[in-house]
Amino acid sequence: MWSTRRQIVFFILLIFPPFLIEYLFFLPLSDITTGVGVYLLLLASWSAFLYIFSRTSGLNLQTSSAEYPIAKSYVPYTAAVDADATEPADPFGLNDATKPVILTTFEALPPAYLIYAEGSDHLPKRVGLKAGRETRIGRSANYSDIVLEDARISRIHAVIQEREDGFYIRDEGSSGGTYVNHQLVNSGEKLLTHGDIINFNAVVYRFELAKYPPSELPPQNFSS
Image 1: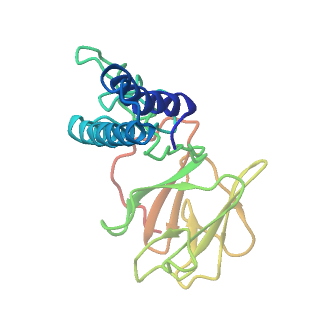
Image 2: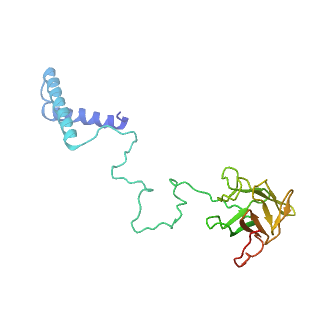
Image 3: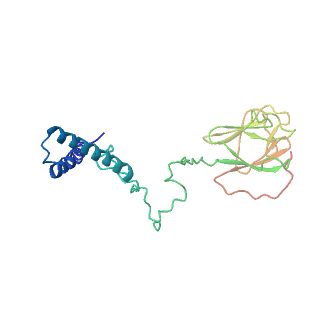
């Protein structure tokens, strides 16, 4: 659509020049019909001239949605970046909205460990015990928290649980038995102390509390 201002300008450009030419050159004509015909002829010629001029010169007589349209070469300020400008380093991509932010959670360290001593070299060398919960030890990955893949170990061999006064171990009816310092754990539970030697049949581990420095015992035969 045309704005009111452009409509007025176009109307003046369309009407006034033919009227001025007729006034200067054709005013002596006494015949009114001839004068009107000359004016219409001039008006048509001038209209054709304006149309051809607007098409060839790229003149846009229509207004845009804004009263003063933005030039095509305009670059928004936020997109204009100085080539010499440097942004603060962001090595972790925290300011990049396209990257997901991964929050790292830290679990508490185990309060105690079982340290491998003897049995089979493929068995885990150091495993943590759960704080305040039961830690199941056995051959079956479906039933055990600590998996000892050895034929001499039962599917669920033993359980170690932390309580207020320490860690307790009990045998779960294993075929090879559970021993603490070469003493068979028949029924019930036995309180563990730092450095105790635990036999799961012929597989041997040493019980260590995390609050004490690791023991450095020389290799020896721990079998019962």
